[in-house]
Image (tube, rainbow, N blue to C red; front, side, top):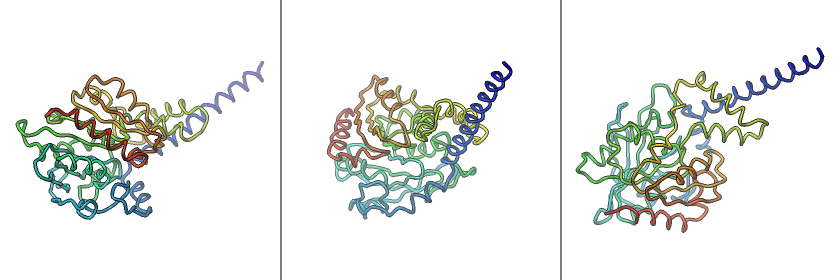
Length: 316
């Protein structure tokens, strides 16, 4: 009997150690994703594509798409941040703001810009804290929307200075969706938004931890993810349990566009599908088999058609 008890205790200790160590390293890796620098450095080693509609292209709107633009300054709480304003050609149909994801850039918005400009929209491509052309955050970390949303608020104030001005469309990729969700939940200017377009949206930080644990391929990924979530507060000062924006996006009363690929290795598609199913307002979806932010590249014609259908949902 003593041998059986000893073996049971040993197995339990090994299991707890495995879960604890796995959770620690997952929490450490997840917290590391929010540190400014490593992701950008890794991306910088890749050869930029020549196609301006390909993710990773770098160059201003004139160089990319032969579109006149103006460099403007946004007054954020941390200081001035640059943005590119591409005015509509001819009569203005509407005004839009593009918000990129973690370690991304303004140029990542050229896919949306090409569609919006064709439809008569003026578009502001923003930078926010920790971007080149914007102030650094004091802690040197991305906040998964918890710290960045006031920078979007500054852009909204620039494009729609009062409630009497035109309401806006916000296009947001990846962590840009988390920034937008926090803005919708917390900003008094949230009522100035009339439509939302999301691509591979990072809606839930907890779901990303679950997804990363599953991608790692180790046994008991769900339990390791649970342990990581308990350890994470000791790895990051951010209240990441609050980095969940499904509720404000579900409640948003205007039209919403949502593109996401099932092969996304960074942001799971499940929360996007749940968001689309939970919404009562007009919602246009494009489900693909693509990796992160790859739905446009997989089928540009289908992406553009779905986005144009979404624009037709916006009442004028």
